[in-house]
Image 1 (cartoon, helix red, strand yellow):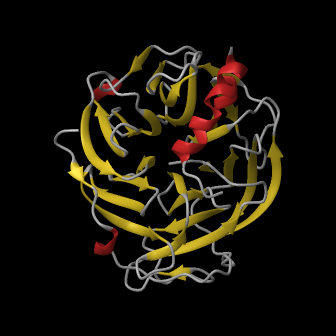
Image 2 (tube, rainbow, N blue to C red):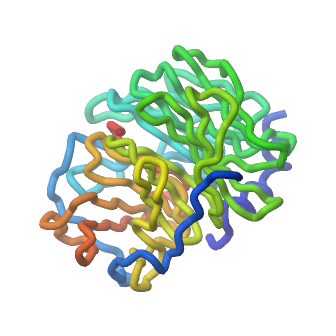
Image 3 (tube, rainbow, N blue to C red):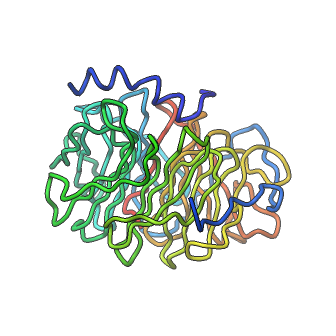
Length: 342
């Protein structure tokens, strides 16, 4: 897969319609400002050291119409099953600390909700969030599940992307958030620890991406980061620092939501860890690692502060990063979530 997300979803819009019936932002830093190791073309064999309490890693395959479940023991993953029932064009996914799993179901204009029990992933959802008339492509849920935000790439008729906000575990959106007047295309979504919504989108009129904040998940939104070449997923760590993907360069880390710099870069150059088409990311429960999906057929675990615990990984020289690479069993992943999530 060599096309980016904008080309891909624009191409699918007619079929999806049939199925359904910035000022004040920080400029995106140059990749050249970051440093990091190179990565060989050979897949990395992960070590078996155990971190945290996570049991599974779940990836979503847009073109496979399925979600892959991997049993986790430290950084050794074993493919367990592929879930396909009722799934059409899945993309972004997220889990909560208490084992609820959300999966955007773009082709059916909804979000599927599953309950994970120890050692078991169910084949069927326990609930569905209706997103009628929209093309949901990413999701974020507060630990209480009383606040869920869904990024919509666009409507089924091709109008501007938006954010659907669900309150008090209801299955219908309480409100819809929009930004500006252009036909923007929603990408990533994250809820911070104060209950604010952050949304990344791509603007085809300017060929650039932006991240906006909606205080309290209400309008109006304010641009906080602009100038991304290709906006993708976003996530917060437990310290409230924002991480985001610019697919052209890699993963960026911010000090809260400002002073952002390249954290782990694409490719095999001096700042690269081997990513090709990074798209979505999520933390595991205890911030031991940041999991990254890559539409070139791989996914990755980026271990924070991993010096001394990097057996079998690509250890960053002086960076404190260990990066484990995995080959996706069921096709190109467009979303990823460890469970239990952060």
